[in-house]
Amino acid sequence: MKNELLKNINLPKDLRLLKQDDLPQLAQELRNFIINIVATKEGHLGASLGVIELTIALHYVFNTPQDELIWDVGHQAYGHKILTGRKAIFDTNRQLNGISGFPKRSESTYDAFGVGHSSTSISAALGMAIASQLKGENKHHIAVIGDASIASGMAFEGLNHAGVTDANLLVILNDNAIGIDPSVGALKQYLTNVKKGTEKQDNIFEALNFDYSGPIDGHDLPLLLSELNRLKTVKGPKFLHIITTKGKGLKQAELNQVRYHAPGKFDAKTGELVTKTSEKLPPKFQDVFGETIVELALKNDKIVGITPAMPTGSSLKYMMETIPNRAFDVGIAEQHAVTLAAGMATQGLIPFCNIYSTFLQRAYDQVIHDVALQNLPVIFCLDRAGLVGEDGATHHGVFDLAYLNCIPNLVIFAPSNAIALRNMMYTAQLGINFPLAIRYPRGRGHLLHWKNPFKIIEIGKGICIKEGKDIAVLSIGTVLKNVEDAIELIDQKESIGCYDMQFVKPLDETLLHNIFSKYKAIITIEDGTIVGGFASSILAFANQKGYNQRILTLGIEDKFIEHGSVSQLQQLQQLDVLSIKKEINDLLFFINNS
Ligand SMILES: Cc1ncc(C[n+]2csc(CCOP(=O)(O)OP(=O)(O)O)c2C)c(N)n1
Ligand SMILES: CC(=O)[C@@H](O)[C@H](O)COP(=O)(O)O
Ligand SMILES: [Mg+2]
Image 1 (cartoon, rainbow, N blue to C red):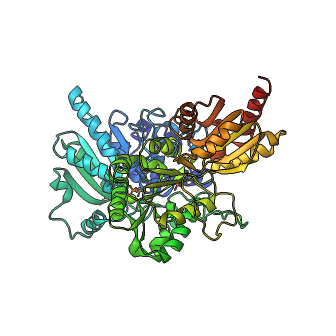
Image 2: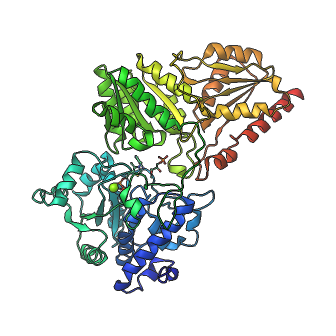
Image 3: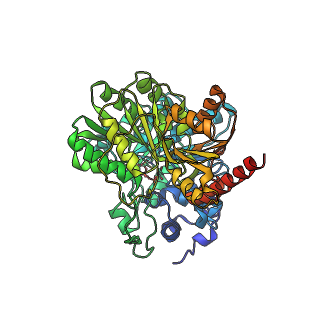
């Protein structure tokens, strides 16, 4: 059985020509196809394997793309992509200039809504369903949402609204009892009871006016087909609860669902992970955070740790294992995580609220209204800041410096290395009377030895890395390493000064006055958007203080950056070593000849 059926399917119309009895074989072929490609090209695995039967059934029963199908998060949509015209290019998934790892409207008419951040599907599908009603159309709108994503506030808001409409909406809950990490919370317990049959009487979704059916086995194709065909005839908001296994069809992925959410390279036949080099590498920043918070919290019982559904990705799991009563996974609930931290801070606790930079966008008002306005000493640890690579436009943490910069009271720190991250966490827990954001990138730093004795970091102070004569490079965050390497390659090194500014807010004005009084030209560099971030602050400083030398600003251009490896994207954004070297040399040439 080698893609006998799949090879003839390019679009759902081809799929609909198959006999129902052929669909289980197609499911097997589709699984193998995904496993073979993800094994070498990497990407999200477990979620897509878990919805193979659902994907086939949906495209078989519904008339996509006229009927609108919305995948929540979209990391489970690989089967959907393959069956909707992207089979031949699926091996470019998540690569530079290849297809996106998430549904994307500009990529296909079958991708009804762009996703990446969770819990948007019900609102989006409801919006489309209401629009269809207003336009007098007769179509179906289907939101497929996971058990972790439906626990988020936004999903509840959508359900709450949908329940008082007669919109033609079908919500399918794909319940596999796990997000990236095991699902948490009272809703998870409720769903567990529904599955056991102990919670049939007062169904929460029926109470919200949905026509509820399930739970049914989401791998049973005939059952899925008959239930979807039935639901097609039911008007108004409907809710189908299906039970699936994340990683279905690959033994290791079923057994170790957390690891196989996005496993990296693995052997397609055995499922074994490709073992990485045994060479000692510098730690990931997430582990510097995870290990340091444990070290600090063992000595300081006021410290608490919070993660919205990313215990593994943030490495807060180390604290959850060591000090479980003070480490909280609150589920996909960024808004709640921030205000929970604010509440804890009012009571004298020291909350480290760890959120991926991109996901903190969800909790912007909470940062302003609940934390900063009340000047509460919440310590935000913003992981995955800057370019994250293959997850692409939905996930790059490139807006944080800009969106945080305009918030009064907030101190913004971007460590240039693991030691600075660790020392800032140490400093913060000694006691601060302001909110603090510490932002650091995905992946590893460059220091092998980082567990030095703790040192206090003076708030608002930058560091002179190297004095120069003509040009000062002002750097913020880990891009400093590229700057230092670039300067090493420059012939007139002695001309170039280099500064690790550390804080975007407050700026080190004393240091800046020294720099602006001395150098002929300034370069700012950051791995965030050039609009409103570090560069903007330096430009405003120069303008306000009457400095008029040339200032070159390097950072992420004012557009959404797509997927690719971090190094490829750095090159495209001129943040790699050679591009920085060129920018410095060009500026040197300019000032020497003007
Ligand atoms: C707002 C937001 N927070 C966090 C994430 C990170 N994230 C991606 S998938 C995922 C788990 C989703 O679990 P579930 O909805 O149950 O889907 P499954 O992976 O089980 O199919 C999380 C937390 C995200 N994409 N968006
Ligand atoms: C789909 C999603 O949002 C997550 O799975 C994300 O891809 C995790 O990113 P990291 O791999 O950086 O933890
Ligand atoms: Mg799930």
